[in-house]
Every structure is written in structure tokens, then in C-alpha cells.
Image (cartoon, rainbow, N blue to C red; front, top):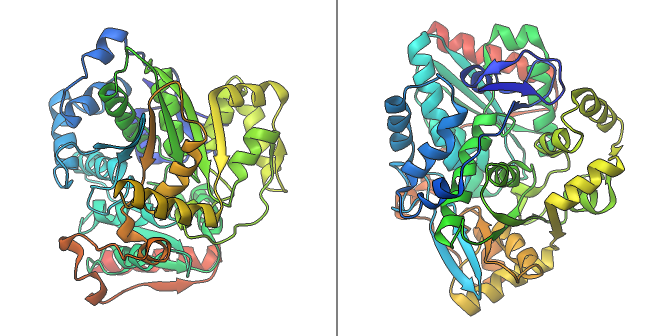
Length: 465
């Protein structure tokens, strides 16, 4: 299995190198040359298997010779041993043919744990073989950062720097990033919004002297291994509801398009997904782009679902790559136009995207109302992001079972949940002392040179010690 860039001019890499590289050197994102197929019988055989066994069967065809079968099974087992539910990703029914896929039972209470815990294990195993050290730099709108820190904290051969938008994440999200005491963890509160943080990370990858000098590695969803790990729970959910003998629909609250792109890969592998529905909050660029064919950022508005406060959705580039017939030059041109205000999607590409994805948006008032009404009707407490998904899903019910991805634990956003339903959700007992822990972070401006200097200085200090 080889991996190619969405912009067409970066080296073709095997899985292991694509994982450790993250962003391609032409600025594009790595995708597999071909999508492995699973037969009807192979999908049916997943029924009743433990989550780890399904994960192995779904992901193994993508890995080439990066790991042996025994190694990879061991990495999967270790990645998910800290999850708080035996099913890892349990389904909960909230209505007639409407189900929540609870993805918040990992160590940081968000769906990012499924990918980050596994990529952490895979990167550690790779570094152990090579003896090399790396510098992980990531941007987060709230959940990726804490998941990355949890996966890599305390490792001698890894430094982790996470950029998050100052004042634009929940207090729980911030504290998950700023309270770890390990010296290899560095939380950076950057002035600006998530798009600014993400842009600076991409700038670092595109500065090859800096990238090579600090051995930069990326764990944002620009990393194909992140997307791959998220493909698995589409299979477990769909098979639990009758696939491959019937279709299943999915609604995905998303800002950076990675989680729903994983569903697209699952469908291309042969999973009978009926509809893939993109759910956005008031920062609705994905909904607008799919409906109008125009991708034009108009500024991020802070919301009660901050992990979706995004206007530049990195993984949408992967969908565009397929929509344009895998024409890397065409995608590179679109990404160049994005830097100067946005772009128009060609008619053929727009039609392909609309055939593949439906979409909808949810206002702040609708988000709060959905939290309240869902709790009253079912007893289920939704985080604001999950509420966005439920609201959009409700206008697409019918014809097949609907699965809405519940992406985070409500206790990560206690103020918004309490305001909506009058009850403050509690953190799990293992996190009960979070508000008593000392915080450690650095506030920096939206300035590439200052960010790079800070990273270099902290690496040098840790290396010297």
C-alpha cells in the first residue's frame, strides 16, 4: 500500500513514512493510492467481534509491512485498554431508528482518543525501532490537543507542542492540556482562532529547514493514520444495526471534516452506508459549500460548540481530491485560491460531493434546545457538538437506521450544558481533581517566528537536561 499527496507532487510513501511525515512536502495531505475492499461476507463476519478485532480487520490492509500482525494486534490492545466502556463505542437509542454512537469513553472524553491513542502507540513503536526522536506540533480547537498530550506525555524521545486559541476553548478542555506535569508537554495559548493555529502549524511543516531541524511530526487529522483509526467505529456501529444486510445512515458533527471523511472511506471499502450527513454549527462553511458550490470563509464566530468553530476544514481537501478525479494540480490551484479568499467548486465536482454528502446547520438556540429536549425525552445528556448532530439528523430521519456521532462527554462543556438544561454534568471520578491542579502554559502571539523560537528553545532545554 502506497500513499500519494492530494496536490500531486510529493514523494509517494509507504504507510509508516506517511504516518511519521503527516503533511506532505508539497503542502497536500496523504491518501492511499487505492481503497481496500471488504466483501459482504467479510463485513457480516464482524458481527459480535470485540472492537479491537474489528479494528485489526479494517485497518490491516492499509499498513503494508510497517508492523507484523502480532505487533499491530498488540498496539491496538494497548491503545484501547484505558477506555471506560467494554464496547469502546457503544450505541444508545434515543428515538425510533435514531441512535447515538458514544465516542467519549476514552481517557480525554472525546472521539479523538480513538485515533490518538492508536497513533501514539504506532509512533512509539516506530521510534523504538529507529532510536530517533521527534517533535509533535499540533493545533486544536479543544479536543485534539488533550488527546495528543495524553497519548505522548512522558515519552523521552517525543516533545509535544499544542497550539490552542486563547480564550476559545472550554475550561475543561484547557485544563486537560495545561495540567499535565511531564516536561515534554508544552501547551501554547495562541492569540487568534483555531484556523490561525492550524495555519501556523502548516507553515511550520512548509518551512523545511525548521521541519527537518526539529524532526517535525503531525498528529492533527492531516495525518492519514488519524482518519484511518476513525473508520473502524463506522463498521462496528453499522454491523450492530444490521449491515451489510441493510443500509445505515450517519450524521456527523464536524468542523475539520476528518470524522465524516472516515465515514466516506468506510463506504468506499464496501460498508453499506446510505447517507453521510455533515452537521455544522453557526460556522457553517461546509454546509454552505456543499449547497452552493462556493467555499469562502467569512470569519469564525465563537460558539458553545467550540471544537467546530472552524472555517478552513483541512480534510475537505481529501474529498475535493476525489471529486476532481484525483487531479493533484487542480486541488493545488484550489488551495492557492483559498489563501486569497476562497474558491468555486466545479460543477462536476460539486455534483459528486452532493451525491456523497448531505448537510445541515444548527444555530446556538437550536443547540441549547436540543440538549434540553433530548434530556427530557430520553435522559441522555448531550454535549453541544453532539446536540448539533442530533438536531441536523432529525431532519434526515427515515428509510434506514440513523446513527449520530456523540463526539464528546457533556462534562467537557459544563457551562453550556447547564445553561441549556439546568443541571451541571459531572466529570468522571478519575478527573474530579482537575480544577485543583496547577496549570502550566505559555501565551504567544500569532507569529510564526516567535512560535518556532519557543519550540526550538524548549527542545534545546530538554535535550540538554
